[in-house]
Amino acid sequence: MLCNIKKFNLKELSSQTFFLFVNTMERVSNRLEKMAVSATLAMTAKSRELQAQGIDVINLSIGEPDFNTPEYIKEAAKEAIDQNFSHYPPVPGYESLRKAVCTKLKRENNLDYEPAQIVVSTGAKHSIMNTMLSIVDPGEEVIIPAPYWVSYIEMVRFCEGVPVVVKCSIDSDFKMTAEQLEKAITPKTRAIIICSPSNPTGSLYSKAELKAIANVLAKYPEIIVISDEIYEHINFVGEHESIAQFDDIRRRCVIINGVSKGYAMTGWRIGFIAAPLWIAKAVTKLQGQFTSGACSIAQKAAEAALNAGNSECKKMTKIFKTRRDLVLGLLKEIPGLKLNTPQGAFYIFAEVSSFFGKEAEGMKINTSDDLAMYLLEKGHVATVGGISFGSPECLRLSYATSEDRLTEAAKRMKEALAKLK
Image (cartoon, rainbow, N blue to C red; front, side, top):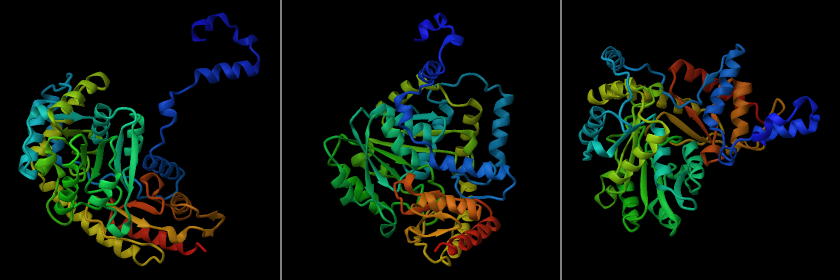
């Protein structure tokens, strides 16, 4: 049809024919049509719409530190500009940055990697998508414990893979057991995703829990382990534990990490993988066709962040822990919320099913998404319903904002929820 477009006199087309003609042109691909919109970004956009109308919305929906990037990192970026780091960088990232990643992994995690095993991408989300596209074929299964980060499912489906969801409850701190994993594995299993500390729950796996999972995976050498460790530095209970530490599965682990969360660098868009060499090469090949190397200036800033260690991360983590304790204490005063104590990240994932079937001010609550919209419209507090996280009975809120705003948000939530009958 498009080849013959000049043969048509659009003025002579009937309105119905013209509609069909335009409708045929304005057609997105099937793979995009099937993809869900990110629930967290959608709620953030809705919050900003209300704020633009002059409404004071407290946004607890976004997963972003409210701190500014530390000064020494910004200075490194300015210096990189002055030194003319303005040309195309290597596809997998500057070697100096990849060496910094290797040094960090050895210093903080006691893991040995070579620069050739590191690929720098435009954020950890990009790193995960690159990995998925590099290893998952149509029809292959990827095991995903629920609650899960909203994009995991859509990434697997985009690769024409099959998400296999393992349901985990608040009573187990939302963590998958080795027994649950064993039951989920089939001959079609290609990969498993583990996120610790977790988005959306803030839960983290202990060394013993990861060892039990690794023992199961050791029996299945064809399964790739994708370990999302982007919240590594926001840990309230001790040292971070990576599943890549276990020799039986080390050679098929892909660590996903970056500087966004721990160093307050979300807008710089730098993530990376540490992976077996064959996967790193595959991701580099893919990235070379899609995006090439990540922003040169941001890479030099990330290099400065990693080389300086995690002292700034610890300062921010201390503040996050204070906020967590504050919010937990306030939310425990609200009847109907079921809570656990998250050990990392900056989220609380509350079970809210006791409010289902209730209503107030013309709004009936049938799902956690309904409850999130009710809290936004009536309480002017933005949260995210648990449906997109694989746990429809829950509600996620982020405490990455000031104590004053968190206190006010809890007050508004308590008042709004008390009206539901």
